[in-house]
Structure formats: C-alpha cells, structure tokens
Length: 113
Image 1 (cartoon, rainbow, N blue to C red):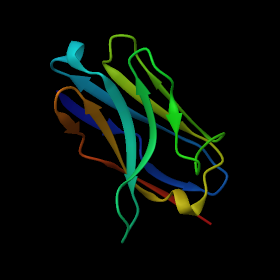
Image 2 (image 1 turned 180 degrees about the horizontal axis):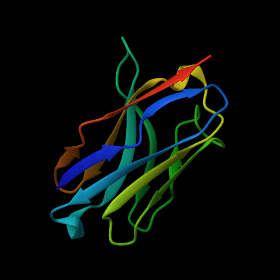
Image 3 (image 1 turned 60 degrees about the horizontal axis):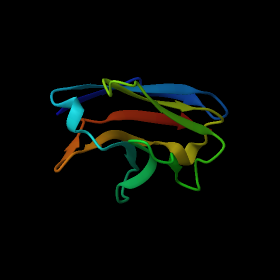
Image 4 (image 1 turned 180 degrees about the vertical axis):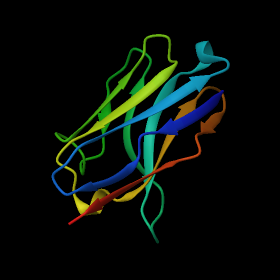
C-alpha cells in the first residue's frame, strides 16, 4: 500500500483546510485508515480513524471540528479541518492498516494566531 498526502498549508486561526491522501496498491486488504499528526518537539498522536464497517473515532482535541471521510474503494482518505487553532499546527500523516502498517510522507499544516 502506498499513501500520498496533500493539502497542507498556512491558514489563520479559525480557518479551514482539507487534507487528502491518495492510496494505491492492495487496497482490498486495508482494514483501517487514519490520520495522525506530529507537532514540533512532540510525539506523533492520533487524530481520526475510519475502520471497515466500524465506528469513526476522533481524538478529543479535534471532535466537532474535524471530519474524516474515505472513498468506498479506499482509494482516498480525507480530513476536513474547520475552526483551526494554532495548536493544530503539525505534520499530518495518513496511515493504513492491513496485516502491516503503512505511513504516507506527511503534509505540513501551519495555523497562525
């Protein structure tokens, strides 16, 4: 599975961005697709996840502001981010799980105050 994230950029606090992740390869084997993020000097953390036939999950810090979605064929994973805050500044990574774990290359989101 190959993952290619895009859509990051610079936005003012309160603004919106939409991240996309294009997936290719053995898409049928994907069980779960997720977004993670890593802020400067911090560990990578979970943002949101959509499993096959399961319940979408969000980190408490983004609930009500971010919306994750996935194409039915698993070829794309999106993250709509609204009401952005400076603390959302991070490199955002898409993640896919089969019997293995796959990471995209990351896309930088910078939220200015």
